[in-house]
Length: 385
Image 1 (cartoon, rainbow, N blue to C red):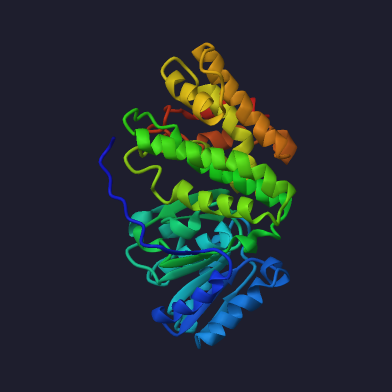
Image 2: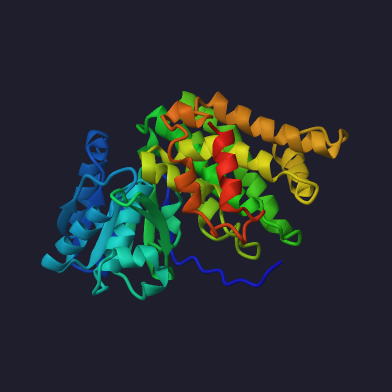
């Protein structure tokens, strides 16, 4: 197991009615910038509940709505201007990962004199940020408990991740009932996103990180059990609760500490989203089995064997290669059973930009589970067509 520093300062209020804890935001100042998407939180009644709690806390509220599913740098700039004009003390995100990511970079950008895109390009420039609070309405990205944010500049076809310890929310409210109205398409895409976060951590070369691997397997099995239930019965509290907590555990550092590795599938998918603005979880689902098939070798067979036996319940008495291949097939079958697209053509992506996208990833995956060149990436893209 590698050396690591593990720190999770985010306080989690989990369960029904936990929105009552939003009044605690008053400890961080008098004025909040509330960052959210479009009309979904209004239709679901979440907006009114949030505003009632903020009113009870005697908070002044400035609103920034319309955050896109792949949040734009232009929205971040707008949020920074609102914070400075209104002397905002704390940034409150109400929504899924997009709203929280946008809020995080706004919070850091207020404390930075230059353009906030600098902070996306280089997270080391983030030295301080306004406090961030989140009310989660969709389980997927784990942004409610991690240090990371992903922001897009669609004009440059760039979708990049950044991060800093000060971006971790000071507290987050996770009420599974708030996810009841999430459409099926986004519910299953969220499950794929959670599984991908877990797989990126799980497929690490460190054989000594036994406990991290077993915890990752538990998260994966949770998604496999409850993903289909949530998709078919969206108001099933048990399913929504387990998926919501799995989302946080997948990326809060618990699974990666001691077995850290550069992520591959996320990097490849970010290019798809940057060029074609597709749903992130769908892109991850369709790329994952193709990446798995490409990196399977004698050197990586041990990990796929564990994956097949411990996650998918493949018979351990059959040959190791058969176990590995069955694990990949079962992964693909599971995503397909949820109705997720499994080819690039299904999400409107052809061959035209594949070389350009893979060239942008040159040198990005030298310290991944399996080192990949831009040529390797192109082959994976082509296999996914």
